[in-house]
Image (tube, rainbow, N blue to C red):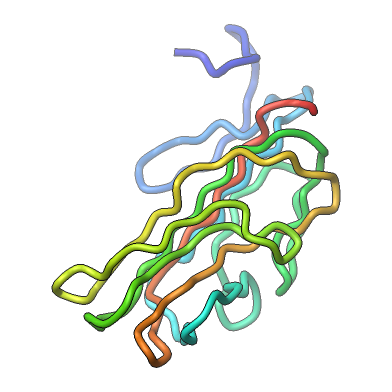
Length: 169
Protein backbone atom coordinates (compact mmCIF):
# COMPACT_ATOMS: atom_id res chain seq x y z
CA UNK A 1 0.00 0.00 0.00
CA UNK A 2 1.09 3.59 -0.53
CA UNK A 3 2.30 5.84 2.25
CA UNK A 4 0.07 8.85 2.96
CA UNK A 5 0.94 11.79 0.71
CA UNK A 6 2.55 9.69 -2.02
CA UNK A 7 1.19 8.80 -5.43
CA UNK A 8 2.13 6.10 -7.91
CA UNK A 9 5.33 7.09 -9.67
CA UNK A 10 6.76 9.26 -6.86
CA UNK A 11 10.45 8.70 -6.22
CA UNK A 12 11.17 8.20 -2.51
CA UNK A 13 14.18 7.81 -0.27
CA UNK A 14 14.18 5.19 2.43
CA UNK A 15 16.16 3.67 5.25
CA UNK A 16 16.31 -0.03 6.06
CA UNK A 17 16.25 -1.40 9.58
CA UNK A 18 15.81 -5.01 10.70
CA UNK A 19 14.51 -6.16 7.32
CA UNK A 20 12.00 -3.30 7.15
CA UNK A 21 12.05 -0.39 4.76
CA UNK A 22 10.90 2.96 6.11
CA UNK A 23 9.92 5.73 3.68
CA UNK A 24 11.35 8.97 5.05
CA UNK A 25 10.64 11.39 2.21
CA UNK A 26 9.73 12.05 -1.39
CA UNK A 27 12.49 13.02 -3.80
CA UNK A 28 11.83 16.60 -4.90
CA UNK A 29 9.10 17.07 -2.32
CA UNK A 30 8.76 18.12 1.28
CA UNK A 31 9.65 15.31 3.65
CA UNK A 32 7.67 14.78 6.81
CA UNK A 33 10.20 14.96 9.64
CA UNK A 34 10.78 11.42 10.84
CA UNK A 35 13.39 10.17 13.25
CA UNK A 36 14.54 6.78 14.50
CA UNK A 37 17.53 6.63 16.84
CA UNK A 38 18.64 3.16 17.82
CA UNK A 39 21.52 1.66 19.76
CA UNK A 40 21.24 -1.97 18.81
CA UNK A 41 24.31 -3.54 20.36
CA UNK A 42 25.68 -3.78 23.87
CA UNK A 43 27.34 -0.63 25.13
CA UNK A 44 28.83 0.61 28.34
CA UNK A 45 26.37 3.07 29.85
CA UNK A 46 25.52 2.97 33.53
CA UNK A 47 22.07 4.29 34.46
CA UNK A 48 21.95 5.66 38.01
CA UNK A 49 18.94 5.27 40.29
CA UNK A 50 16.79 8.19 39.12
CA UNK A 51 15.41 9.60 35.88
CA UNK A 52 18.43 10.17 33.63
CA UNK A 53 18.75 11.42 30.05
CA UNK A 54 20.56 8.96 27.79
CA UNK A 55 23.29 10.65 25.72
CA UNK A 56 22.79 10.07 22.00
CA UNK A 57 26.32 10.91 20.83
CA UNK A 58 29.78 10.49 22.28
CA UNK A 59 30.46 7.15 23.93
CA UNK A 60 27.01 5.85 22.97
CA UNK A 61 27.48 6.33 19.20
CA UNK A 62 23.91 5.52 18.24
CA UNK A 63 22.68 4.82 14.71
CA UNK A 64 20.48 7.70 13.56
CA UNK A 65 17.97 7.36 10.72
CA UNK A 66 16.41 10.75 10.06
CA UNK A 67 14.82 12.80 7.32
CA UNK A 68 16.61 16.08 6.46
CA UNK A 69 16.57 18.86 9.02
CA UNK A 70 17.24 16.82 12.17
CA UNK A 71 20.49 17.60 13.95
CA UNK A 72 22.06 16.06 17.02
CA UNK A 73 24.69 16.42 19.69
CA UNK A 74 25.19 14.98 23.16
CA UNK A 75 22.14 16.96 24.36
CA UNK A 76 19.76 15.16 22.02
CA UNK A 77 18.03 15.59 18.69
CA UNK A 78 16.82 19.02 17.49
CA UNK A 79 13.27 19.19 16.09
CA UNK A 80 13.33 20.63 12.53
CA UNK A 81 9.68 21.71 12.15
CA UNK A 82 7.00 22.90 14.59
CA UNK A 83 3.88 20.76 14.86
CA UNK A 84 2.40 17.63 16.38
CA UNK A 85 4.66 14.58 16.73
CA UNK A 86 4.16 10.99 17.81
CA UNK A 87 6.94 10.05 20.26
CA UNK A 88 8.15 6.71 21.59
CA UNK A 89 11.17 5.24 23.40
CA UNK A 90 12.38 1.91 24.72
CA UNK A 91 15.30 0.89 26.95
CA UNK A 92 16.80 -2.52 27.81
CA UNK A 93 18.33 -2.93 31.26
CA UNK A 94 20.91 -5.40 32.53
CA UNK A 95 20.01 -8.14 34.96
CA UNK A 96 18.86 -7.05 38.43
CA UNK A 97 15.60 -8.18 40.01
CA UNK A 98 15.17 -5.26 42.43
CA UNK A 99 12.92 -2.22 41.93
CA UNK A 100 11.09 -0.85 38.93
CA UNK A 101 12.34 0.14 35.46
CA UNK A 102 11.10 2.85 33.15
CA UNK A 103 11.81 5.00 30.16
CA UNK A 104 10.33 7.78 28.08
CA UNK A 105 11.07 10.88 26.04
CA UNK A 106 12.38 14.19 27.36
CA UNK A 107 11.51 17.39 25.50
CA UNK A 108 13.83 20.20 26.58
CA UNK A 109 14.59 18.19 29.74
CA UNK A 110 10.94 17.56 30.71
CA UNK A 111 9.21 14.17 30.50
CA UNK A 112 6.34 13.95 28.00
CA UNK A 113 5.15 10.46 28.68
CA UNK A 114 6.82 7.35 29.91
CA UNK A 115 6.39 4.12 31.81
CA UNK A 116 7.66 2.83 35.16
CA UNK A 117 6.96 -0.88 35.59
CA UNK A 118 7.85 -3.69 38.01
CA UNK A 119 10.93 -5.75 37.09
CA UNK A 120 10.27 -9.24 35.75
CA UNK A 121 11.47 -12.24 37.76
CA UNK A 122 14.65 -12.75 35.71
CA UNK A 123 15.65 -9.16 36.26
CA UNK A 124 16.47 -8.47 32.59
CA UNK A 125 13.92 -5.98 31.33
CA UNK A 126 13.06 -4.10 28.17
CA UNK A 127 10.62 -1.26 28.76
CA UNK A 128 8.71 0.48 25.97
CA UNK A 129 7.12 3.79 26.84
CA UNK A 130 3.54 4.28 25.65
CA UNK A 131 3.39 6.20 22.39
CA UNK A 132 2.44 9.80 23.12
CA UNK A 133 1.64 12.85 21.04
CA UNK A 134 3.25 16.19 21.75
CA UNK A 135 3.14 19.65 20.23
CA UNK A 136 6.78 20.51 19.54
CA UNK A 137 8.44 23.73 18.39
CA UNK A 138 11.26 24.00 15.90
CA UNK A 139 14.48 23.82 17.95
CA UNK A 140 13.05 21.68 20.79
CA UNK A 141 15.45 18.97 22.02
CA UNK A 142 14.47 15.29 22.27
CA UNK A 143 16.26 12.66 24.37
CA UNK A 144 15.34 9.19 25.57
CA UNK A 145 15.53 8.71 29.32
CA UNK A 146 15.94 5.80 31.68
CA UNK A 147 14.47 5.55 35.16
CA UNK A 148 15.18 2.73 37.57
CA UNK A 149 14.86 1.98 41.26
CA UNK A 150 17.27 -0.91 41.88
CA UNK A 151 19.30 0.96 44.50
CA UNK A 152 22.45 0.96 42.35
CA UNK A 153 23.53 1.84 38.81
CA UNK A 154 22.47 -0.59 36.06
CA UNK A 155 23.94 -1.26 32.64
CA UNK A 156 21.77 -0.42 29.64
CA UNK A 157 22.16 -2.74 26.66
CA UNK A 158 20.20 -0.83 24.00
CA UNK A 159 17.60 1.88 23.42
CA UNK A 160 15.38 3.42 20.75
CA UNK A 161 13.89 6.89 20.26
CA UNK A 162 11.29 7.57 17.58
CA UNK A 163 9.59 10.82 16.52
CA UNK A 164 7.14 11.06 13.64
CA UNK A 165 5.61 14.31 12.43
CA UNK A 166 1.80 14.16 12.40
CA UNK A 167 0.93 17.65 11.21
CA UNK A 168 0.88 21.37 11.95
CA UNK A 169 -0.45 22.87 15.19
